[in-house]
Length: 97
Image (cartoon, rainbow, N blue to C red; front, side, top):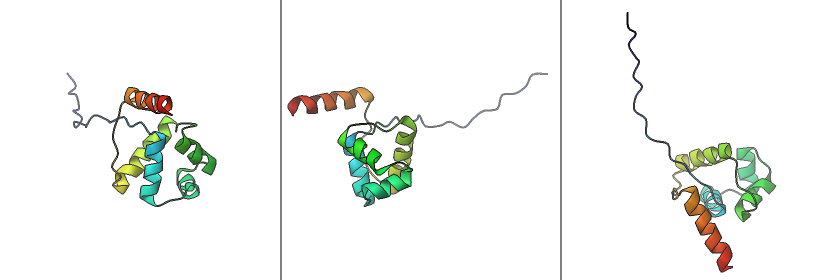
């Protein structure tokens, strides 16, 4: 006897968000939080938030997903860009400085 396959509901394709220093700072400003307050909410150090905002480090992929959820729930509007677009923009900024 053949087993029938269970059909899963169609899901929207997942967007891939790339959080650069400007987007992280803009989200924090939108939320009206200090670096320390945002760090406490994300369970990271205040220094980590600072390093993200200065571009010294980027958040790990799991943290980027959390940032995306926080942004969506708070109504924060931001641009979804591919990793290549972000890298090109950062390169242009560093050349122009």
